[in-house]
Amino acid sequence: MPSCRFTVISPVPRLLILLAAAALCGCGRLGNRADLACLNGAECEILDPPLITAQNTSRVAYAVFEGLTAFDVKGEATAGVAERWEISPDGLHYTFHLRHNALWSNGDPVTAEDFVYAWRRALIPETASEYAYQLYYVRGAKAFNEGKSKDFSTVGVTAPDPYTLEVTLENPTPFFLDLCAFTELLPVHRATVEKYPDWATKPDHFVGNGPFLLREWLPFDHLRLTKNPKYWDAAHVALNSVDILPSVRPNTAYNFYATGVADLMIDKGLVPTPLIPELKKSPDFHAAPFLGNYFFRFNVKRKPFNDPRVRKAFSLVVDKDYLVKNITRAGEVPAHSFVPPGAGAGYEPPPMYERNPEKARQLLAEAGYPGGQGFPVVYYLYRSDSDLDQDVAVELQSMFRKELGVTVQLARQEWTVLLDSQQRIDYDISRSSWVGDYNDPNTFMDMFVTDGGNNETGWSNAHYDQLIAAAGRENDREKRFALFREAENILVTEEAPICPLYYYVGIQIYDANRLGGIEANLLDEHPLKAMYWKKR
Image (cartoon, rainbow, N blue to C red):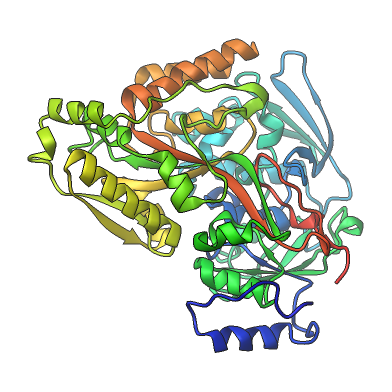
């Protein structure tokens, strides 16, 4: 392994970085170094499928669990625990046939009943899963989750025998096989869950069914995964061990890569933005568009953002071109819709209004704040551990002051605290991001239905809800897309509880001459089980 790949930058003590590099890589790999060291963003959440909300944690979850289907290197859902399935002609009934050689890491067989148990657990209100709505496509699941039905037999999932799972949907759902790979629908080992309350954080108690085992977890230091010999496809898993290294500071993360402490930077937020123009010249820099965006939310329950005129005024003064050219600089595209163009193989979103400061000032005056007079002090909430978030926040603050004459204070919170503030809708304006869970416009649109688990704005619009529900029942692709376009126009133009800023590009930094099994894809999914060394 080379001792240095690029020029090292260091906001942390240079000596400490070099000592770390010497200790961990030196002239060769030491016995305690994993086959692959991966920088994955912030510290992982609890590895309990229905409680996972962050992309970095889902990457680990897909390594230690496997659903009926699983994402491959192209971001497509392929056979997982289910080796095959049949779909009824009306698209409502799925019969999954599970592999007889799929085992839990303790040797127990993975059965259809494990999925029934896991899906029920994800839906019971006591679990408080933010993503429970991803199971609402299953008949009766929404009523059960909302407590309207106490009888789980009314939910359309049954296990007629240990290796057959039958699922009945409310409506034909073209992306259901993709959902079957998603964290919310992953199985869990019932006996372990019920015996050990700490099972999802303690390697000694953890039981999974994925290609890797959770071997060590030292918070804020590393998470060690080792190859699972009981995984049904273990013969095709090339890596024997993987270290997941948490890091939220781009400069620190890049130093670890540059000095050889890490082999792969896989999180889009870990690249130091000041270095991007130079890094883009390196063959180790890999970037491609994917279904994700950066936006900010308004708390519509709190004045003055309960007035859509105020929300639209703030949105109309944002110079998105400036942000991507001068702040992010990785090839991001300004967002003129919430759903990225091309989602679902052909969806074209309605265009959002263009930047118009004069119109914005007019709207603000109509709302009772001419020239910003009398406007209360409000706060823009962002991550305290993200240099990019701070840079974007400072620019937005300046735009709001210059064009609207209003004072927006900046408020920083640690990532998990910020997520909690958003969930409780305890903010004025908050930075946000969304990465598609599957390749369909619905993954962006259904989150803003009334009381949706990831709505987190307090916004509610009955017509919007009706359009999303109608799209869920529509089989004709073009009619379905038309319903989404009408709904999206309400979301980003008429009511504006959010303001899209730019579409993400996925960024990975690694030496493609040495490391294989990574491909750009629309979901930015990069399964560890597919990675391998071409040479060391």
